[in-house]
Length: 199
Image 1: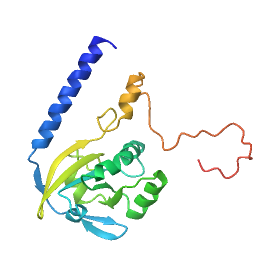
Image 2 (image 1 turned 180 degrees about the vertical axis):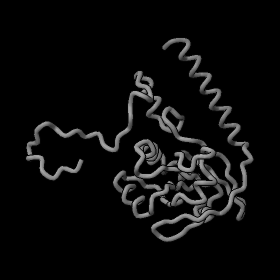
Image 3 (image 1 turned 90 degrees about the vertical axis):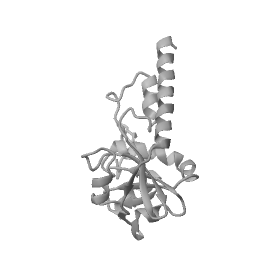
Image 4 (image 1 turned 45 degrees about the horizontal axis):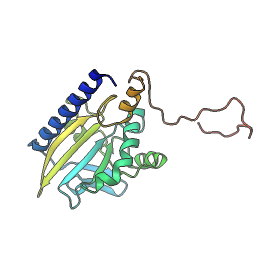
């Protein structure tokens, strides 16, 4: 490994450590108690906390985004670890039944809620002025008071999806690879005749 690579990795580590220190001390801003739709009916932001004082909401653009699917696929593996300290809910504009059907097709275990493209996502987007940007928001509660503690946008090459760093180590950049829903490729000839294949 070159000295320059090692030096940059050390700088990134130090900067990330500093960033996390700032996130820890962030005062945040008070937000309303928004309402979401679920398969079990309406639920408020406050109710999503359950008995916890912190809540992590994953902002997902919906089933039409391969990149959002990639992030959720990765975070799904961490879900039990995250849920040991705070509830995790994936929110998108998709209707609750569509959310559940797609989540089941990916083996996602997230709790799901739909913001339906309404006030929540317009006012709580992770990117100002854009109401459907993928990312993550952490909220804290003190009684009935809800504070938006920290937020971050998801995007190719970010710190939240480890595949980008692994691809980069192989010399594959974010413009060289696009995630897919499935990677199976149909053979030129099918031994079973190839009828009724859903690809």
